[in-house]
Length: 413
Ligand code: HGY
Ligand code: MN
Ligand code: MN
Image (tube, rainbow, N blue to C red; front, side, top):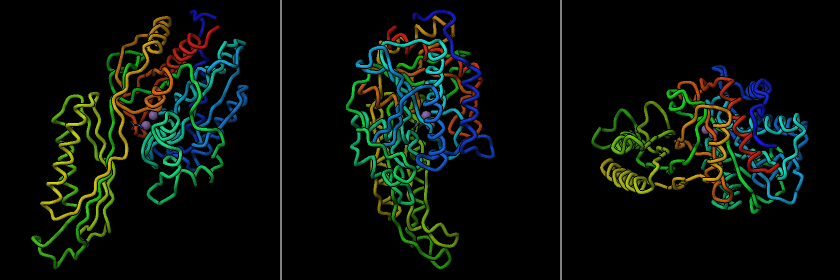
C-alpha cells in the first residue's frame, strides 16, 4: 500500500479512546493523576492491554514493566517498526501528555485492521514505564534502561519520597515482566506527542516535524542548617536552611534568564524540614532542572549554579549536598525518519514546521538504539503539565494520520 489521499485513521474512535482513558485518574479540574506504578497507572495499563489484544496484538512486558503490543508482519523475522509513548502523568497532569502517543499508535493498528493491510515488517506499540520522572526520578527511566543509559538494577532501585522502589511497585501492580529490557533490533521508532508549548498553535501549524530535543540536567540539593526555636534564637545566630534555599531558587532563575532566550531553569520541588511554623528550618531538599539545546551552554549554567550555590550555603552557615541525578545531551533525531514525517504531513496537506522539543521524551533515549523521530501536535495555549491541558480532536486525528503514513513508509508493503 502506498500512502494515498484516503489513508486516514478513524479520528472519532481515537477521540473516544482518549476520553475513556482520561476517566482513569481523572481529577476534579479535568486533568489526570496517574503517577507511575500507582493503582490508576495499573488500571490504565490494563485498559491499554485489553484494547491491544482486541486489536489482535500479542503482548509482552519487559523487566522494567514497559508493555509491547505486537502486530505480525508478513515477514516476522524482520526488525519491527515501533511507535508509542507513555501513560503515566504528572500529579496535576493533563489528558494528552503521553497518552496521545500510545493511543495514536493503537489507532494505527486498528486502522490497518480495518483496511486488512499487512505490513512487511511487524509493528509494535511501546508503552514505556515512568516517563514523567515525577514519582520516581529520573524521567524516561524505562526507555533509558532499554537504550542502555541506566542498568536494570538502577531502574529497579529508584524510590519515591516514601521509599517505595520501582521494582517493588512493579511487582505490586503485576507488571514486573520477564522480557529482557532492550538489546533487540528496532527498525524505526516514532512518537506522537503534544508540543507542550505555544509555537504550533500560534503559527497555526497542525504538525511539528521534530528534528531535535534540547538537553536536560536534573540535580537534587540538600541544605543542612540547625533547627531551633523561632522565638528566642537571635537573627544573627541562625543557620536557616530555608533562607539558603530561597536564595538558591532566585539564583537558579537568574541563571535561566541570563542565558535567554533558549535556556530554562526551574526549581520544581522543595521539602522543608520540620515544616513547622515556629521552628527555624534545619533541612531543605530541592530539585533543579536545567535545559538548553546547546550542551556547552548547559555546562556553563551548571558551573554557575554549583558555584553560586556553594557561596550561598557558606554565607548562611549551611552544609550543602548536590547530586546530578539525570543528564542527557541535546538529541538530533534520524534524518530518514524525519523525512518520513515530513512527507506524511505533506501528503495529507497539513500545515507543518520543523521544531525542537523543549520537553524530554522516550524517543530521546530510544534514538540511541533505533532511528527515531517525533510528530508534534499543537496544544491549546501551549499549556501542559497542567490539568487544563487540552487539544482539538482534529489535531489528534492529524497526528495519528501522519503516524500511520510514516509507519507504513518504514514498515514496507
Ligand atoms: O521532563 C520532561 O521533559 C518530560 O515531561 N519527562
Ligand atoms: Mn510526555
Ligand atoms: Mn510530561
